[in-house]
Length: 467
Image (tube, rainbow, N blue to C red; front, side, top):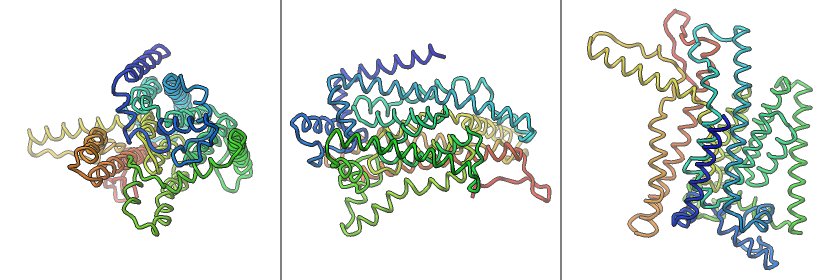
C-alpha cells in the first residue's frame, strides 16, 4: 500500500508546484471562497511586516491569526510554498494511518459480534469484508490530496491547511489511543480556530472505548478518565496560550483572534452563513443573533454524543461537517477535511448503487409484463437516497461561486443576493449530504441487529422511519 500512497503524494505535489508557477496562483489567492479574513495569506504577510517593524501585529484590524503562526512564518517565509505542500502531505499521511488503524478496530469488533451472534442472520450483505476495507485508507488520502478544494487552499497559502493538519494528527492520536497526544493536538486545534473544542466529546468517547470503560454517568471510572483527559486538554491549552503571551509579551491576541471569531465584525463575503445576514441587520439586534448563529456549532454536540456514543469516529466526522458549515469564517479547505472521510462510509454508498439497479430491473419488469409489481420495501435499507443530486448541487455551486462573484463585483449586472443565494444553496447541500449519511448509517446499524426484513405484530412488512 505504500507505493500507491507515494504515487498519490507525488501527483499531488506536482499539481501544487505547477499551479504555484502558473498565473492561476494569484487568481486563486484572491478568491473569497478559499481565503477568509482569518486565514488569508495577505493578512499573514501584513502581520509579519508589522512584527519586523517592532509593532504588535494585533495593533491594527488586519491580522487575526495566532502568534505561533506568525512566528512560524517569521522564520519560514521564504519557504512558504514548501511548508504548505508538506503540511498537506502530512495531513494526508496522518489520515491514512488513522483510517488504517480504525479499519482494524472495526473489523475486530465486527468479527467479535458475529461470533457472539449479535447480528441478525439475514444481514450478510451489510457486513464489511477485508477486501472492501483494504483500499479505504488510500482513498481517504486521495480524496484529501487531490480534492480541488484542498489544492486551491494550498495554492492560496491559506492557513486553514495548517488547521487541518493539526486536526488530522489529533484524529490519528485519538485512534491510536494516546490520550496525551490527543489532548495536546486538540488543544492546538482549539487554539488555532476555537471551534474544534466540540471534538472533545467524540475523542473522549473513543478513548473510553479503547480503555473498555463503560460510558455510564454513575461509573466512577468514567468520571475519573474524563477528568484526566479534560485536565490534559486544559493544561495543554493553558501552556500554549502562555507561550503565545511570552512570545508577544501581550494579551492582545486574545480579542484579536477569539473575539474576532465570536463577534464576526468583518463581513467580507465568504461561503458561510453569517456575512449577508449581519450586513442587512440593524446594529442593536446583532449581538442576539450572533449568539444564536454561534450556538449552532456547539448545540448539536450533546444530542449527537447521546445518539452516537457507540460510534465516536462517525460522530467526529459529523461534527467536523457541522463546524465547516456553521463556523463564522468558513473556507473550502474546511469542507475538504470532512469530505476526505467520505470513503470511510463507502459501504453506505454501495447500497445506493444496488438500489438503482433494483429500481431499473423493476421498471423493466413492469414494462414487459405490465402486471408484475416490485416490492420496494424489500430493497436494502441503508440507502444514501440523494447522493447523486447533492453531489451535483455541490459541484455546480463550486463553479457558480466565481461566476456570480464576477457578475456582482466586476460586471455590475448582479448584486449580493445572487452570491448569497449560491452560498446558501451550497450550505443546504452540505447539510442534506450529512443528513443523508447520518440517516443511512443509523438504518444500517439498526438492521444489523434487527434484520433486513422487519414485520409488524400482525405479520405484515414494516418500514423503518427515523424520527
